[in-house]
Length: 369
Ligand SMILES: Nc1ncnc2c1ncn2[C@@H]1O[C@H](COP(=O)(O)OP(=O)(O)OP(=O)(O)O)[C@@H](O)[C@H]1O
Ligand SMILES: [Mg+2]
Image (spheres, rainbow, N blue to C red):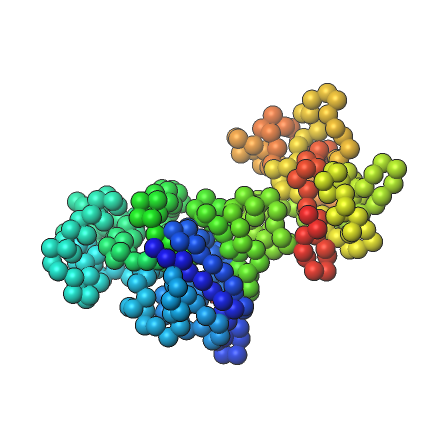
Protein backbone atom coordinates (compact mmCIF):
# COMPACT_ATOMS: atom_id res chain seq x y z
CA UNK A 1 0.00 0.00 0.00
CA UNK A 2 1.37 3.35 -0.98
CA UNK A 3 0.59 6.43 -2.93
CA UNK A 4 2.48 7.24 -6.11
CA UNK A 5 3.32 10.81 -7.11
CA UNK A 6 4.64 12.36 -10.30
CA UNK A 7 6.12 15.84 -9.94
CA UNK A 8 6.86 17.64 -13.21
CA UNK A 9 7.88 14.39 -14.88
CA UNK A 10 9.24 14.42 -18.43
CA UNK A 11 10.53 11.59 -20.60
CA UNK A 12 12.47 12.30 -23.75
CA UNK A 13 13.35 9.73 -26.40
CA UNK A 14 15.46 10.87 -29.35
CA UNK A 15 14.88 14.57 -28.59
CA UNK A 16 11.10 14.11 -28.42
CA UNK A 17 9.22 14.58 -25.14
CA UNK A 18 6.91 11.59 -25.16
CA UNK A 19 5.78 12.46 -21.63
CA UNK A 20 5.47 16.13 -20.73
CA UNK A 21 5.16 17.73 -17.34
CA UNK A 22 3.08 15.06 -15.65
CA UNK A 23 1.85 16.03 -12.19
CA UNK A 24 -0.25 13.40 -10.59
CA UNK A 25 -0.93 11.75 -7.28
CA UNK A 26 -2.30 8.23 -7.14
CA UNK A 27 -3.82 7.86 -3.69
CA UNK A 28 -3.10 4.98 -1.40
CA UNK A 29 -5.34 2.00 -2.41
CA UNK A 30 -6.81 3.89 -5.31
CA UNK A 31 -7.59 2.23 -8.65
CA UNK A 32 -6.25 4.76 -11.12
CA UNK A 33 -6.59 4.23 -14.87
CA UNK A 34 -4.30 5.86 -17.40
CA UNK A 35 -6.14 5.98 -20.71
CA UNK A 36 -5.36 7.43 -24.11
CA UNK A 37 -4.73 6.51 -27.73
CA UNK A 38 -1.76 4.47 -28.91
CA UNK A 39 1.55 6.24 -28.45
CA UNK A 40 0.32 8.83 -25.93
CA UNK A 41 2.84 7.72 -23.29
CA UNK A 42 0.82 5.40 -21.03
CA UNK A 43 3.30 2.53 -20.91
CA UNK A 44 6.17 4.96 -20.50
CA UNK A 45 4.50 6.40 -17.38
CA UNK A 46 3.94 2.94 -15.96
CA UNK A 47 7.48 1.83 -16.75
CA UNK A 48 8.82 4.89 -14.96
CA UNK A 49 6.92 3.88 -11.81
CA UNK A 50 8.33 0.36 -12.13
CA UNK A 51 11.86 1.69 -12.66
CA UNK A 52 12.16 0.18 -16.15
CA UNK A 53 12.63 3.72 -17.50
CA UNK A 54 14.11 6.73 -15.73
CA UNK A 55 12.44 10.14 -16.11
CA UNK A 56 14.45 12.68 -18.10
CA UNK A 57 13.32 15.30 -15.59
CA UNK A 58 11.07 15.48 -12.56
CA UNK A 59 10.50 13.26 -9.57
CA UNK A 60 8.58 10.09 -8.87
CA UNK A 61 7.66 9.09 -5.33
CA UNK A 62 6.31 5.80 -4.05
CA UNK A 63 4.95 6.49 -0.58
CA UNK A 64 7.28 9.19 0.73
CA UNK A 65 10.33 7.75 -1.00
CA UNK A 66 11.87 9.46 -3.99
CA UNK A 67 12.48 6.51 -6.32
CA UNK A 68 14.46 8.18 -9.11
CA UNK A 69 17.52 5.99 -9.56
CA UNK A 70 16.15 3.20 -7.36
CA UNK A 71 16.46 -0.24 -8.96
CA UNK A 72 13.18 -1.89 -10.06
CA UNK A 73 13.58 -4.75 -7.62
CA UNK A 74 13.99 -2.32 -4.73
CA UNK A 75 10.71 -0.54 -5.50
CA UNK A 76 8.33 -3.22 -4.29
CA UNK A 77 5.97 -2.86 -7.23
CA UNK A 78 4.41 -5.71 -9.22
CA UNK A 79 3.76 -5.35 -12.92
CA UNK A 80 1.46 -7.30 -15.22
CA UNK A 81 2.30 -6.93 -18.90
CA UNK A 82 0.06 -7.15 -21.91
CA UNK A 83 1.76 -10.29 -23.22
CA UNK A 84 1.83 -11.98 -19.75
CA UNK A 85 5.48 -13.05 -20.26
CA UNK A 86 4.99 -16.42 -18.53
CA UNK A 87 7.94 -18.82 -18.54
CA UNK A 88 6.83 -21.54 -20.98
CA UNK A 89 8.95 -24.34 -19.48
CA UNK A 90 7.70 -23.78 -15.92
CA UNK A 91 4.36 -24.92 -14.57
CA UNK A 92 1.87 -22.50 -13.07
CA UNK A 93 3.16 -22.97 -9.53
CA UNK A 94 6.75 -22.23 -10.52
CA UNK A 95 5.71 -19.26 -12.64
CA UNK A 96 3.96 -17.78 -9.65
CA UNK A 97 6.72 -18.73 -7.23
CA UNK A 98 9.59 -17.50 -9.37
CA UNK A 99 10.03 -13.98 -8.01
CA UNK A 100 9.65 -15.20 -4.44
CA UNK A 101 12.40 -17.80 -4.95
CA UNK A 102 14.64 -15.09 -6.36
CA UNK A 103 14.10 -13.10 -3.20
CA UNK A 104 14.96 -16.06 -1.05
CA UNK A 105 11.52 -16.35 0.55
CA UNK A 106 11.36 -19.63 2.57
CA UNK A 107 9.74 -22.61 0.79
CA UNK A 108 6.80 -22.97 3.16
CA UNK A 109 5.98 -19.29 2.84
CA UNK A 110 6.17 -19.50 -0.97
CA UNK A 111 3.79 -22.44 -0.98
CA UNK A 112 1.33 -20.64 1.25
CA UNK A 113 1.35 -17.46 -0.81
CA UNK A 114 1.02 -19.23 -4.16
CA UNK A 115 -1.82 -21.35 -2.81
CA UNK A 116 -3.62 -18.28 -1.48
CA UNK A 117 -3.22 -16.35 -4.72
CA UNK A 118 -4.31 -19.39 -6.75
CA UNK A 119 -7.45 -19.68 -4.67
CA UNK A 120 -8.32 -16.01 -5.05
CA UNK A 121 -7.95 -16.38 -8.81
CA UNK A 122 -9.61 -19.81 -8.98
CA UNK A 123 -6.63 -21.50 -10.60
CA UNK A 124 -5.64 -23.78 -7.70
CA UNK A 125 -6.47 -26.83 -9.83
CA UNK A 126 -4.06 -25.69 -12.58
CA UNK A 127 -0.85 -25.37 -10.58
CA UNK A 128 0.85 -28.30 -12.33
CA UNK A 129 0.04 -27.23 -15.86
CA UNK A 130 2.39 -25.51 -18.29
CA UNK A 131 1.27 -22.19 -19.84
CA UNK A 132 0.63 -23.81 -23.23
CA UNK A 133 -1.97 -26.05 -21.58
CA UNK A 134 -3.99 -23.03 -20.44
CA UNK A 135 -6.64 -20.87 -22.08
CA UNK A 136 -6.00 -17.16 -22.60
CA UNK A 137 -8.06 -16.24 -19.56
CA UNK A 138 -6.25 -18.79 -17.40
CA UNK A 139 -2.87 -17.47 -18.52
CA UNK A 140 -4.08 -14.03 -17.65
CA UNK A 141 -4.93 -15.21 -14.15
CA UNK A 142 -1.48 -16.74 -13.74
CA UNK A 143 0.08 -13.43 -14.75
CA UNK A 144 -2.08 -11.69 -12.14
CA UNK A 145 -1.23 -14.39 -9.62
CA UNK A 146 2.45 -13.87 -10.18
CA UNK A 147 1.92 -10.24 -9.29
CA UNK A 148 -0.26 -10.75 -6.21
CA UNK A 149 2.03 -13.29 -4.49
CA UNK A 150 4.53 -10.48 -4.26
CA UNK A 151 2.76 -8.42 -1.61
CA UNK A 152 3.77 -5.37 -3.55
CA UNK A 153 2.97 -1.82 -2.45
CA UNK A 154 1.76 -0.91 -5.92
CA UNK A 155 0.26 -2.96 -8.74
CA UNK A 156 0.98 -1.85 -12.27
CA UNK A 157 -1.00 -3.30 -15.16
CA UNK A 158 -0.32 -2.52 -18.79
CA UNK A 159 -3.29 -3.47 -21.01
CA UNK A 160 -3.58 -6.84 -19.29
CA UNK A 161 -6.83 -7.76 -21.03
CA UNK A 162 -6.09 -6.84 -24.60
CA UNK A 163 -5.25 -10.40 -25.68
CA UNK A 164 -8.60 -11.76 -24.54
CA UNK A 165 -11.78 -12.06 -26.56
CA UNK A 166 -14.58 -9.61 -25.83
CA UNK A 167 -16.57 -11.84 -23.49
CA UNK A 168 -13.60 -12.92 -21.41
CA UNK A 169 -12.44 -9.33 -21.23
CA UNK A 170 -15.69 -8.29 -19.58
CA UNK A 171 -15.38 -11.18 -17.14
CA UNK A 172 -11.73 -10.48 -16.27
CA UNK A 173 -12.54 -6.80 -15.90
CA UNK A 174 -14.89 -7.71 -13.06
CA UNK A 175 -12.27 -10.10 -11.63
CA UNK A 176 -9.66 -7.38 -11.48
CA UNK A 177 -12.07 -5.00 -9.76
CA UNK A 178 -12.77 -7.70 -7.18
CA UNK A 179 -9.07 -8.41 -6.83
CA UNK A 180 -8.41 -4.76 -6.10
CA UNK A 181 -11.04 -4.74 -3.38
CA UNK A 182 -9.59 -7.89 -1.91
CA UNK A 183 -5.88 -7.02 -1.89
CA UNK A 184 -6.43 -3.37 -0.89
CA UNK A 185 -3.42 -2.14 -2.80
CA UNK A 186 -2.78 0.84 -5.04
CA UNK A 187 -3.47 -0.08 -8.69
CA UNK A 188 -2.30 1.84 -11.73
CA UNK A 189 -3.94 0.37 -14.80
CA UNK A 190 -3.16 1.29 -18.40
CA UNK A 191 -5.61 0.86 -21.25
CA UNK A 192 -6.55 2.50 -24.52
CA UNK A 193 -10.13 1.29 -24.04
CA UNK A 194 -12.35 3.99 -22.60
CA UNK A 195 -14.98 1.45 -21.52
CA UNK A 196 -12.39 -0.33 -19.38
CA UNK A 197 -11.32 3.02 -17.99
CA UNK A 198 -14.88 4.06 -17.17
CA UNK A 199 -15.87 0.78 -15.56
CA UNK A 200 -12.71 0.09 -13.57
CA UNK A 201 -11.20 3.35 -12.41
CA UNK A 202 -11.89 5.20 -9.18
CA UNK A 203 -10.28 7.98 -11.15
CA UNK A 204 -9.23 8.26 -14.76
CA UNK A 205 -6.31 10.18 -16.21
CA UNK A 206 -6.69 10.95 -19.91
CA UNK A 207 -3.37 11.30 -21.71
CA UNK A 208 -2.85 12.68 -25.20
CA UNK A 209 0.52 13.28 -26.82
CA UNK A 210 2.31 12.87 -23.52
CA UNK A 211 0.21 15.39 -21.62
CA UNK A 212 -2.59 15.02 -19.09
CA UNK A 213 -5.81 16.30 -20.61
CA UNK A 214 -7.99 15.78 -17.58
CA UNK A 215 -8.21 13.65 -14.46
CA UNK A 216 -11.19 12.82 -12.32
CA UNK A 217 -13.83 10.24 -11.50
CA UNK A 218 -15.36 8.55 -14.59
CA UNK A 219 -18.72 10.30 -14.35
CA UNK A 220 -17.10 13.71 -14.04
CA UNK A 221 -15.12 13.16 -17.25
CA UNK A 222 -18.26 12.02 -19.01
CA UNK A 223 -20.42 14.88 -17.72
CA UNK A 224 -17.87 17.67 -17.87
CA UNK A 225 -15.07 16.97 -20.33
CA UNK A 226 -12.51 19.78 -20.13
CA UNK A 227 -11.79 19.86 -23.84
CA UNK A 228 -12.75 18.35 -27.18
CA UNK A 229 -10.18 15.59 -26.93
CA UNK A 230 -11.66 14.20 -23.70
CA UNK A 231 -15.20 14.84 -24.96
CA UNK A 232 -14.54 12.78 -28.07
CA UNK A 233 -12.55 10.07 -26.32
CA UNK A 234 -14.90 9.21 -23.43
CA UNK A 235 -18.27 7.80 -24.50
CA UNK A 236 -19.35 5.57 -27.35
CA UNK A 237 -20.55 6.36 -29.95
CA UNK A 238 -18.54 9.54 -29.55
CA UNK A 239 -20.00 12.96 -28.80
CA UNK A 240 -21.35 14.80 -31.86
CA UNK A 241 -19.54 18.01 -32.69
CA UNK A 242 -21.14 20.83 -34.69
CA UNK A 243 -18.54 23.19 -36.11
CA UNK A 244 -19.60 26.65 -37.24
CA UNK A 245 -21.95 27.12 -34.29
CA UNK A 246 -22.80 30.60 -33.03
CA UNK A 247 -23.94 31.97 -29.71
CA UNK A 248 -26.75 34.50 -30.15
CA UNK A 249 -28.83 36.51 -27.73
CA UNK A 250 -32.31 37.97 -28.32
CA UNK A 251 -35.55 38.54 -26.38
CA UNK A 252 -35.91 34.77 -26.13
CA UNK A 253 -32.63 34.46 -24.22
CA UNK A 254 -29.27 32.95 -25.17
CA UNK A 255 -29.20 30.22 -27.76
CA UNK A 256 -26.76 28.42 -30.01
CA UNK A 257 -27.39 28.40 -33.77
CA UNK A 258 -26.27 25.17 -35.40
CA UNK A 259 -25.36 25.49 -39.04
CA UNK A 260 -27.97 23.55 -41.05
CA UNK A 261 -29.54 21.82 -38.03
CA UNK A 262 -31.47 24.35 -35.98
CA UNK A 263 -31.03 26.00 -32.63
CA UNK A 264 -30.57 25.08 -29.00
CA UNK A 265 -31.75 27.16 -26.07
CA UNK A 266 -29.01 27.56 -23.47
CA UNK A 267 -30.35 26.63 -20.01
CA UNK A 268 -30.01 29.17 -17.19
CA UNK A 269 -27.08 27.35 -15.60
CA UNK A 270 -24.92 27.90 -18.71
CA UNK A 271 -26.11 31.35 -19.83
CA UNK A 272 -23.20 33.27 -18.32
CA UNK A 273 -20.62 30.93 -19.79
CA UNK A 274 -22.33 30.97 -23.18
CA UNK A 275 -22.30 34.79 -23.20
CA UNK A 276 -18.52 34.67 -22.84
CA UNK A 277 -18.44 32.77 -26.14
CA UNK A 278 -20.48 35.34 -28.09
CA UNK A 279 -18.68 36.39 -31.25
CA UNK A 280 -16.15 33.54 -30.93
CA UNK A 281 -15.81 30.57 -33.23
CA UNK A 282 -17.39 27.78 -31.23
CA UNK A 283 -18.13 24.10 -31.59
CA UNK A 284 -21.29 22.70 -30.08
CA UNK A 285 -21.30 19.18 -28.63
CA UNK A 286 -24.08 16.75 -27.73
CA UNK A 287 -23.82 13.03 -27.01
CA UNK A 288 -25.87 10.57 -29.13
CA UNK A 289 -27.78 9.45 -26.02
CA UNK A 290 -28.92 13.01 -25.29
CA UNK A 291 -31.06 13.33 -28.42
CA UNK A 292 -34.69 12.20 -28.56
CA UNK A 293 -37.07 11.45 -31.40
CA UNK A 294 -39.50 14.39 -31.44
CA UNK A 295 -42.41 12.20 -32.57
CA UNK A 296 -42.21 10.24 -29.29
CA UNK A 297 -42.26 13.25 -26.99
CA UNK A 298 -45.20 13.62 -24.61
CA UNK A 299 -47.75 16.34 -25.43
CA UNK A 300 -46.60 19.76 -24.26
CA UNK A 301 -42.90 18.79 -24.21
CA UNK A 302 -40.34 21.55 -24.41
CA UNK A 303 -39.53 22.26 -28.07
CA UNK A 304 -37.09 25.15 -27.52
CA UNK A 305 -34.09 22.99 -28.49
CA UNK A 306 -34.65 21.01 -31.64
CA UNK A 307 -32.47 19.90 -34.51
CA UNK A 308 -33.58 18.53 -37.85
CA UNK A 309 -31.72 16.91 -40.76
CA UNK A 310 -32.19 14.14 -43.36
CA UNK A 311 -31.47 10.57 -42.23
CA UNK A 312 -28.54 8.75 -43.88
CA UNK A 313 -28.42 5.44 -42.04
CA UNK A 314 -30.69 3.61 -39.57
CA UNK A 315 -29.33 0.77 -37.42
CA UNK A 316 -31.78 -1.31 -35.38
CA UNK A 317 -29.91 -2.73 -32.42
CA UNK A 318 -32.89 -4.13 -30.55
CA UNK A 319 -32.39 -2.12 -27.39
CA UNK A 320 -32.11 1.11 -29.35
CA UNK A 321 -32.11 2.59 -32.85
CA UNK A 322 -28.97 4.37 -33.99
CA UNK A 323 -29.53 7.02 -36.60
CA UNK A 324 -26.99 8.92 -38.66
CA UNK A 325 -28.12 12.18 -40.17
CA UNK A 326 -26.21 14.98 -41.83
CA UNK A 327 -26.38 18.56 -42.99
CA UNK A 328 -23.73 20.87 -44.47
CA UNK A 329 -21.05 18.19 -44.21
CA UNK A 330 -21.61 17.49 -40.50
CA UNK A 331 -22.80 14.03 -39.47
CA UNK A 332 -24.74 13.48 -36.27
CA UNK A 333 -25.42 10.16 -34.56
CA UNK A 334 -28.39 9.68 -32.25
CA UNK A 335 -29.29 6.74 -30.01
CA UNK A 336 -33.05 6.63 -30.03
CA UNK A 337 -35.81 4.68 -28.37
CA UNK A 338 -36.45 1.38 -30.23
CA UNK A 339 -40.04 2.53 -30.90
CA UNK A 340 -38.63 5.22 -33.15
CA UNK A 341 -39.12 4.77 -36.91
CA UNK A 342 -36.78 7.05 -38.81
CA UNK A 343 -36.82 6.74 -42.61
CA UNK A 344 -33.69 7.01 -44.74
CA UNK A 345 -33.79 10.14 -46.87
CA UNK A 346 -36.54 11.77 -44.81
CA UNK A 347 -35.89 14.61 -42.38
CA UNK A 348 -35.86 13.65 -38.70
CA UNK A 349 -36.57 16.03 -35.86
CA UNK A 350 -34.78 15.49 -32.59
CA UNK A 351 -35.10 17.13 -29.22
CA UNK A 352 -31.80 18.13 -27.65
CA UNK A 353 -31.51 17.54 -23.91
CA UNK A 354 -30.44 21.09 -23.14
CA UNK A 355 -29.09 20.18 -19.70
CA UNK A 356 -26.52 17.95 -21.41
CA UNK A 357 -25.08 20.32 -23.98
CA UNK A 358 -21.40 21.22 -24.38
CA UNK A 359 -19.69 24.19 -25.96
CA UNK A 360 -16.04 24.40 -27.00
CA UNK A 361 -13.81 27.14 -28.30
CA UNK A 362 -12.87 26.30 -31.90
CA UNK A 363 -9.34 27.62 -31.48
CA UNK A 364 -8.27 26.29 -28.08
CA UNK A 365 -10.70 23.33 -28.08
CA UNK A 366 -11.32 24.05 -24.38
CA UNK A 367 -14.82 23.67 -22.96
CA UNK A 368 -16.90 26.68 -21.96
CA UNK A 369 -19.25 24.13 -20.38
N1 LIG B 1 12.59 3.06 -25.90
C1 LIG B 1 12.05 3.97 -26.71
N2 LIG B 1 12.79 4.66 -27.60
C2 LIG B 1 12.25 5.60 -28.41
N3 LIG B 1 10.95 5.94 -28.41
C3 LIG B 1 10.15 5.29 -27.54
C4 LIG B 1 10.65 4.27 -26.67
N4 LIG B 1 9.61 3.81 -25.93
C5 LIG B 1 8.53 4.50 -26.33
N5 LIG B 1 8.84 5.38 -27.30
C6 LIG B 1 7.90 6.31 -27.95
O1 LIG B 1 7.25 7.04 -26.94
C7 LIG B 1 5.89 7.25 -27.27
C8 LIG B 1 5.02 6.74 -26.15
O2 LIG B 1 5.13 5.35 -26.09
P1 LIG B 1 4.31 4.44 -25.07
O3 LIG B 1 4.76 3.05 -25.25
O4 LIG B 1 4.40 5.03 -23.72
O5 LIG B 1 2.85 4.64 -25.64
P2 LIG B 1 1.48 3.97 -25.18
O6 LIG B 1 0.56 5.07 -24.80
O7 LIG B 1 1.74 2.91 -24.17
O8 LIG B 1 0.93 3.33 -26.54
P3 LIG B 1 0.21 1.91 -26.83
O9 LIG B 1 -1.24 2.12 -26.51
O10 LIG B 1 0.41 1.73 -28.30
O11 LIG B 1 0.86 0.86 -26.00
C9 LIG B 1 5.66 6.56 -28.61
O12 LIG B 1 5.71 7.54 -29.61
C10 LIG B 1 6.81 5.59 -28.71
O13 LIG B 1 7.16 5.39 -30.06
MG1 LIG C 1 1.59 0.82 -24.20
